[in-house]
Amino acid sequence: MTDDTPVTSAPGAADDPSTPEFWDARYGESDRLWSGEPNPQLVAEIAEVEAGTAVDIGCGEGADAIWLARRGWRVTGADISSVALERARAHGDQAGVEVEWVQTDLLAWQAPADGFDLVNVQFFQLAEPERTVALRRFAAAVAPGGLLLVVAHHPVHAETGVPGPPADRLYTPEDVTALFAAPEWETVTAETRTRTAAGHHSGTTEFTDSVVLLRRAR
Ligand SMILES: C[S@@+](CC[C@H](N)C(=O)[O-])C[C@H]1O[C@@H](n2cnc3c(N)ncnc32)[C@H](O)[C@@H]1O
Image 1 (cartoon, rainbow, N blue to C red):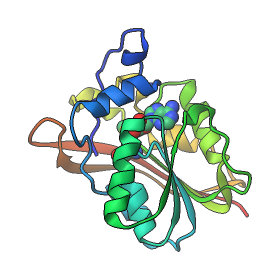
Image 2 (tube, rainbow, N blue to C red; image 1 turned 135 degrees about the vertical axis):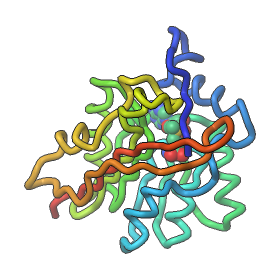
Image 3 (cartoon, protein in one colour; image 1 turned 180 degrees about the horizontal axis):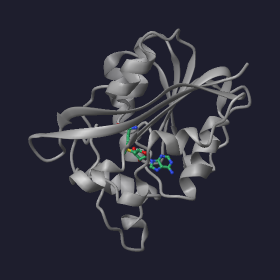
């Protein structure tokens, strides 16, 4: 995926990236916003993990959820945008997989009590203090012994001019690991990785990803 969310936002639902109106308008700009391929850091971190239950936080057009479902995971894909979810459902049907697609504001979401074996959070870019509140909420949805994978655009994007969210919505691996301490959380991966991928407009872009995989104690 790529993200070229406008770098400024004016007041009002259509310009506020925490609203369904913003994301519905964003998805409405084209027939397909993202690549349709699973995010590379999801594949890198999870390909060898035994399947269980998973939730994809901000699942967008569904590529990660579908990739997981194809590998035997029982997946919930959750997003605020009905436009994105309509596409995700269609892509899932085309792929012949079953995913539970849920439209919800994940900032107010109550996870099921027994949690998920994997909570996948890819490019959920919030500024503080909302980021900490949201990441803690998503972490609370991880079952004992389960995994929390957080992948985000790195703050270096603000210096290198990679199009995307404003600087205060970018975060480092350390911003994430600082929230989740031992003994409840074991850090499996905390890395900054670069990759080259198609940009949203044309050509290729070098993206820098903050990649954190945490395991919750049993
Ligand atoms: C940058 S996109 C990433 C999509 C997908 N995870 C990917 O990597 O391709 C962020 C997604 O989060 C969703 N989103 C943003 N705020 C949300 C919220 N409060 N509740 C649920 N979904 C939200 C958007 O609709 C969008 O699909």
